[in-house]
Structure formats: C-alpha cells, structure tokens
Length: 305
Image 1 (cartoon, helix red, strand yellow):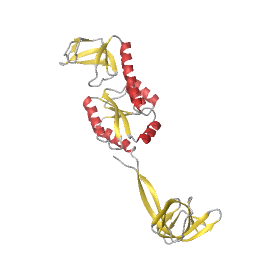
Image 2 (cartoon, rainbow, N blue to C red):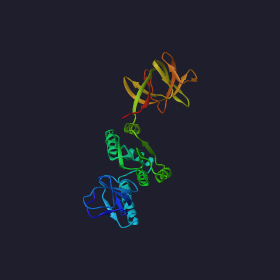
Image 3 (cartoon, rainbow, N blue to C red):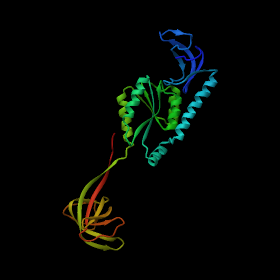
C-alpha cells in the first residue's frame, strides 16, 4: 500500500533485507499499471527475494544504495544474533547448551505463502518444553536465498523450505558453508522431523537394571592384588565390569565397579546363582565376611517430546 509519493515501474526499491528494480505493478483488479499513488494497493514484481509482511518499503536512488542498505540490515541481524550468544559451530552450540542450560533448535523457515509460514511457526512453538524449544531465527515468504544461507551460517540454523526451493546461488553457498537445507510440502512431516531432532537435545534418563546378589563368605589377601572376596551368588547373576553396591548391615557403604570375577583360577564373564566365585573391586579394599554385593547395570534411555 503506497503511503507517500508515487511508485513507478523502473524504480529501485528496498524492503527489509530484500531489494530490486520494479519490473511490473499490478493493481487490485489484476491489471498492469505504470504508476501508483498514495493509498493505492499494488503488487510489486522485481524483488531479489520476497520481503516479509510488515517490512518498511522505500524507493532509493540507485542499486548501489539498495545493496548498501540491505547488506547493513543483514550485518546488523548477524551481529544481534552474535551478541545474543549464538554459537558459530555445532561444537560451540553444544558447549553453550551445556554451560547455560539452554536447549534450542535454531531454524530458518521460508514458505510459499505467509499463512503456511505462520501455521508452521505455531506448530513448532507448541513442541517447546522447559528443557528444549524450537527457535525460529527467521521466517518469510519466497524461495531460499544467499541471505538466508548467510543467516543460517551465523546462527547455526537448519534451513527449511516449505513448497519453495533454494535458488542456484543459495544452493552453491549452502554446500560451501555446510548448511543443511530440507524441503517439505506437508506440515505434519516437517513438524515430525523437527520434533525428532529436538528430542535428541533432551538429556537421557538413567535406568538401573538389577542383575543379582552375592554374599561374601571369606576374604583373602592376595599379594600384588590385595583383598579378594570369596562369594556365593545367591540371586540372579553377577557380571564382570558391572556396577556394584557393597551393603553392610543393610547400609550401602560403597558403590563402584566389579573389576575382577573368577571361578577357581579362571577369569569369567559372569557367574549364575548357586555358584561360588572370587571378586575384587576397583580401588576398594574394605570388604568383610557377610557383606552383600548387589550387582546392577545402568543404561541410558532416550527421551522423546
């Protein structure tokens, strides 16, 4: 919507971080016009990329000035991202997440129409939890451009195109910078993929798996080894390398690793219930007869949103 002055075919125009020469003006009746005055709504053809709804639109004197303005706006956007603590590489991002507790999945989304972009943004925001959220660095209408790749490089974001594609220059630049571009035409597929990726940022839960119990029947002092427990496996099985708790008078006095497990003189991997064995524990010697050895494993369980 023209607010002041007159917009003409051939003018150099800037809107947001996009610029171009006006190749055609189309009025609200679908007819081509040469000029448009104040309060006249027109569709403008000629931008290098689609501006966002709400961007300020202005005519400038020449292409050099247009490039200067858009380059400045892109640079300021990158600086803003940088001062906000944006990681430049994946390693830096993960380190930052570890240090400040933030779990963010940065995205740049471009779509065919504003309605689709807004629907995608709304769906992704609903995925957020106290631990992880999708951070939309930038969204807009139109194909993916070099400016989008530049922003993705600065913010370590993934580029998503919904019913749009990257132009040839953007494709080459993305390959050079190692920026991932994903294309979708179904919103549910897009949301499912982002949801799966965000789940990967969640810390796994730890689940303890009980293996078995053993009772120390006798303690031996072995030269160059130290104390070795002569045990009877009373329940389940015990495994070499597994986690163990040493229980004395129903109180846990040590938690460590079962470093040595023997049947007679042979090193074995595991010993089932009802059999005797010899045990030694990593960096621990305070063992006594009738102590109970609780053997267990700990596994990580992936979480999902």
